[in-house]
Image (cartoon, rainbow, N blue to C red):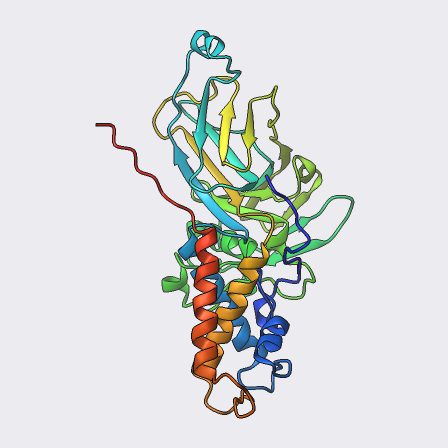
Length: 360
């Protein structure tokens, strides 16, 4: 797997509001257009350029059927097909079964659960849980990084920086998961009237950078909180609850990934191999949440993203931005058409192909 080249785009300050995307940034776009930097006082503003970058990056992902950004996948189900040990040994294989994820370029397994007939067995990361037993007696939850590190206090309330505990135990649990993940509360917004993405304010590093939460499918009042730290490092995180309506379990090391342990992975292809027969049943017996996405951004992707955003800006320019063509040998429309053609040609290089095999 290629991990690095001198031409890769290496900016890590990903913040769309400030014009910094995963594939390009406002400075590269300004240089392409030969204009001054975008600010809060220009038209378009820096935030508006960031929004164009975000939409363009999504277009690139959809067009290429690939991604160079982190993708969070939650509760993806797979069937487990057992392969007899004798057959495996005959074929020189050291595993009894495997699954292939829907996305390649696996970055981290957040949760890997195997159905044991009556319960799920967790095989990945470090997890804790918070259970809402009485939504009327909730105060807050505090998550802390290892070695007495940064703390995140999650308070019940109705603002976008809080989790709404007004409507019931299950709604409160789902709201807590949205706040930890800092995502839009799509399942609860029709009840709570929320109009913005959940985001914990006042923290330099967001809580979603270090933790990921899912609501337990077997008990919708319970929130499973997984550490995003490498391996089992998250077992040293802590969780505390305040209020008689909350209970918790501490972070526990579930990590069992190694060639000689329960399972091992091929990150590039998204394959997971099970060394022993963990799943109890065949159908839908594996449930996994993970982060996927290529770890490097090739220069062609950055170039394509920059040109496509530049085309959007030229197309929407209404003379409020200084994109002039009076002194240029190429008019703006020709530039736009040329950039778009070049960008689409570059994306074709990275477009993934789908193959359908006919058993007949």
